[in-house]
Image (spheres, rainbow, N blue to C red):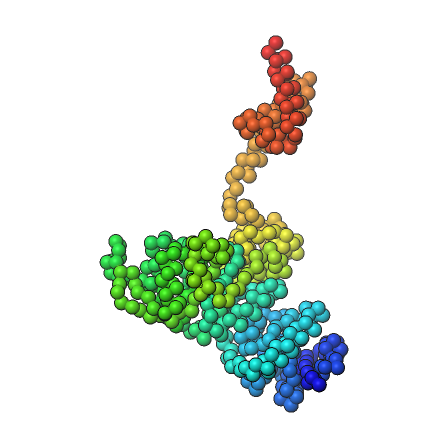
Length: 476
């Protein structure tokens, strides 16, 4: 007969405990409940349950502290933390400390049984394999990744899982989505956090200088090399090097990167000395590197070396629920820099932000709010205060004024024509002018002119024939 599995629930909300027990209790599952962290820990030590599901907000010590005590007592223990207000830092730290999962409470009505079954299955596999997972210590670091969406929660969990390893990580996502912040978080939560974290954008440095930037050069190695230069790999020894836009890296530099990853050694440009560096690589790209490998513009062996773990950051338009949180965060940061109270967003302004597709992602949102805060005339931002799209990048849109002046001139012209000849049918005159302008604008291309006017080509031909007849009558 199969061993009955035990689940320990620790939560201050007795109603939740009753509901969750009913959901999880079964002939093969025994559910234990406690409402405080100290009682929960005592029950864990006595009963040795297969799974602990604990709320973050516990007394007399937090769910995070309970996780730490449980993992110290039993390094293989399966623990799921829950919270109504899970922060970026708490999610990453929980995963780093060995939590099986971190679940927001509003998701539990839909996912409770699924996550519990997954954890119980993992516990059974661990027992069968008789593996051992060492405890990881918690380190406090400042973190600026913001997000409460399910997609970003998965990103935080991945950061927590990979931070304690030495594996190379590839971060993918659109430009402006926050790839460098993810790389920095991986470093900050790793054992290398007290060493250098350096970032370099491979697309921003000319190909002939990138090798020198990464590996350094000797004096006289090339024209302009007046002194010896220490490259990023030497500067980053025992630390983390973030290679952004790695898909733009030339093949000759890719070869040297591969050698560092394989052998841990390199030489400066123009030098013969073999140097050694212990550097963890985190790279980022908005390209499809599999396609670049197929086109032979990116080395396949280097791709597999770098793509050990992949973390994808979804674009902002796919996580609308993060926009309010991000906007408030940016406004608070801007206020701190200027030593003044933060501006507030009206509900209408938030709806405008949430409806916009943000092609520039988080970076565009930050820049938009930066500009709005500069031009704000009140302490609450309204929709009219928030520049979006092209307006956001043009502080003085002269073309808008020109367009308005052109429209005013056109209207004035129409009035003048009507006043000069009251018998002139105004609509046919406007139709003729629009038709002639469209033909001029498209170089007498009837297909394009018809499309510009929003009519069929047959209708355009009728107008042209009618205009031609009017012109002939006028000549006679």
